[in-house]
Image (spheres, rainbow, N blue to C red):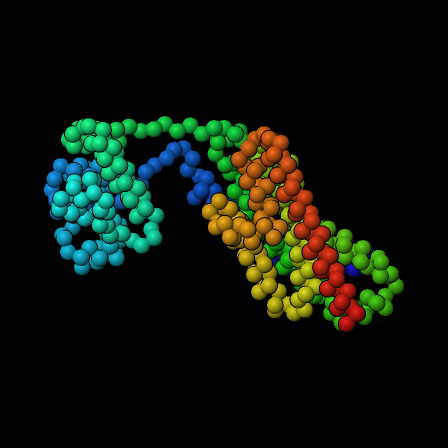
Length: 383
């Protein structure tokens, strides 16, 4: 087992890199669950510093100001564009609405839009836009239904004080919320690809050293036995990394993860991603011939796939074009399966077929990547 021992010796030399990525992975998973999944007790509206410049001073304008004051903090600003821009630049105010003269005739009965100043493309701007549109539409509907302006504004103000109670449907056994261990598994592809591609690539480069190849060729160990020992080394390192990544959610979440009925699927999904990562590591180790290049190639593959496939950014947020392209990458199907597991406790026939499709596609990707790597390896050996 000389080749196998040499394989493990080279792996030990890169153990510090593997531990570094495990720490990075654990930190990202904990930070993500704190930001995204840590506050699941309720919904809280955001209050912003906004300004209302009232040039009309009519009943409708006063009603709009009072309506916005229930959600935000109104800041007094002079009607001076330079001062408004200065305050907005330093984020002392996030939104300024200017109510023109003849507000009722121009904006409620007419089609004129309210002039507003906001941070371009900001979520807070769209948030206040929606609230103003809601107020104007509600008042417009009531006045056209025969109510006076005073009654309409008063009714809208009264109704906005009512708070809706929202109860999530418990489809996954966690009160409708995404379980915390799902966040850790969402980031799993990044750590698997990073650790295995780094460690395996260095090992492959070491074994392709001309002096090492000559010694292995001249040794009494048959080529078949050497290849089997390399495969065994791959399996050992892969299972070791997979075991550590599986142990972390068990230690962190305990019964919450163990009692999840989807736990076997989580384990299978991450195991298939481990196989994909091993295939990628073999391909990179076959293509790259210098250790200095490994870091750049692995970073492009791991980070690129993570951003495109929903590891760092959830698939629902990605654009349609990005999702279409990501379907040609294995991590995308891992994340689709992870989304099904985190949002459902039981599966319909269609969901179950989608889950199995994701598993099967990961296997096919692993086989395809391994096939390409073997072709490249054969071409290099005969070149």
